[in-house]
Length: 410
Image (cartoon, rainbow, N blue to C red):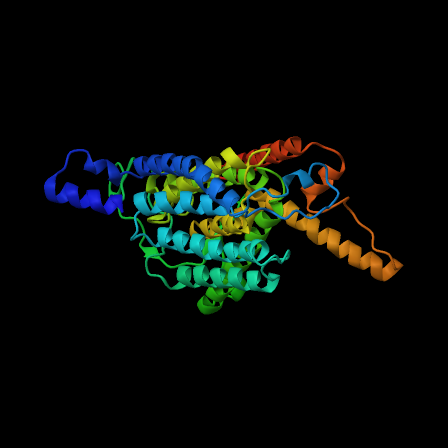
């Protein structure tokens, strides 16, 4: 909003200082500051409202140390995160940018699904909340929207690698060398994505379909559905300890923001030999708002938590991360970058699968872990909650660093 307003003021009235809103760096800094302030200031107000309304978490007794002490803690705190993301994005983002539009729609979409789940748990007193099949339908629906938008929108294109050697000056208009000026290749629609650790780090989904364009895009839509569903559920399963999913998600969002900036900058994209995606740099504003929102929420969500995010927050965080990665064509980096989410999901699937298998074979179900998801296994081993959380944060930071290193290691 401010981008368009101050651009008009600058062009019409030459208002001093209004040009600063044209810079992504300035708007990103403003977004992260505003998101932090909203999370900290309005977070306190929302917590007080939830307490007055007695909107508290009904904790099931799983035999975990200190678990029952959390009973009655306000939930649905994901509303704080959503507000802290959406308000700065609407104010400082370019609302005519297709990627920003996708992120806003994704945030609201998943927030509604998570909010319905929390509403049923809290106000209808159904412990299971929204039935799993309805959650999956919502996640699949979002994946379908994102995938088809990436397919059909004329604003979503990439620019193939520029055919210019010994470039000395690169602008968004042309590439100048010592001898001649080369125009970059034209923007194209493509099903290519980034694959880590390979020299030519691009994978075309068309390779799996014999270069059939229609089938390639249909495959891409299926991948989008899978990615959104998997990452959203992974974040949801990780949300079990105070500050766990919040702190784990911050390095993920920061790395995605860095990748968006590099992919949307023609000079850095050419230097790093990565896919140049016009207009994707605007996603840095969204990433900044989301990082600020998560850190602001951590102010109240760190141990001992004064509020839980509920599915309103956890489903949204995972799904938004997935959509962001799809927008910058880095979805194949998510198993590494979101390694915590992946391991937590696998721990549940392995636990359930092994239990059912051994029950059929031996007549008695057996377990691999003391309890799943994985963070509860460590709780059962009497490791203090804050130690588990901080160690998971450290692992997330390590995975984030390794993900950035993939830009150079091929």
